[in-house]
Amino acid sequence: KNEVEQSPQNLTAQEGEFITINCSYSVGISALHWLQQHPGGGIVSLFMLSSGKKKHGRLIATINIQEKHSSLHITASHPRDSAVYICAVRSRNQFYFGTGTSLTVIP
Amino acid sequence: KAGVTQTPRYLIKTRGQQVTLSCSPISGHRSVSWYQQTPGQGLQFLFEYFSETQRNKGNFPGRFSGRQFSNSRSEMNVSTLELGDSALYLCASSLEVTGHEQYFGPGTRLTVT
Image 1 (cartoon, helix red, strand yellow):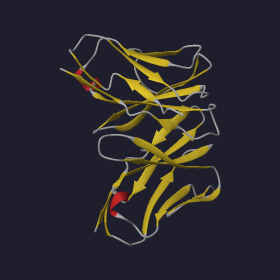
Image 2 (image 1 turned 135 degrees about the vertical axis):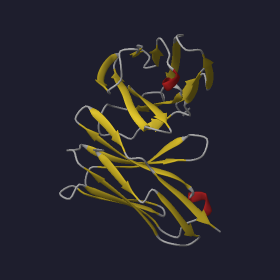
Image 3 (image 1 turned 180 degrees about the vertical axis):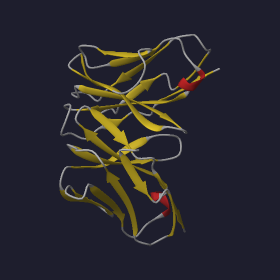
């Protein structure tokens, strides 16, 4: 069983659409991270959450600790948002990663 | 401020050889973590260092080791390379072990033939 599950695995959207990526986890956590990985491998940390909600520009991340669930929302999606989005959790002395959501935004 | 740098960026090795990868964190960052990324297993945590001490370790065999120097630079070593060690190795730095964003380097792509 994976400690972190993401859905959907793949997502294609039209430019301008509102996008939601979900992450569920089964372990106790001290923090949850949303990462973005573009082709070529570079990873950027988008958010680090331990409670509530954070917003950076068009990106919003929420977490519900009781339900062990987090969502990443992208408003007014743009082709440059095309990337793999990875949910990661820090639990005790370990990091666990979801398998990623591959997002393609079509102009 | 310069970002996290990793050297080399690409490496080809033969089975049975050993390899050392290097990571220079952002200035002032004292924590360095290492990750392995493969198409089959995705991202996996290798180890985490803080103030020259290994704080946490993932579920990898003893062939994988690392260390951190007094200037926070870190190296990881893989001995007796296997084909399955072919992967993108990423390091990330942060100010402290917990409670801070991680900043990732570009990675070292290791190919074992």
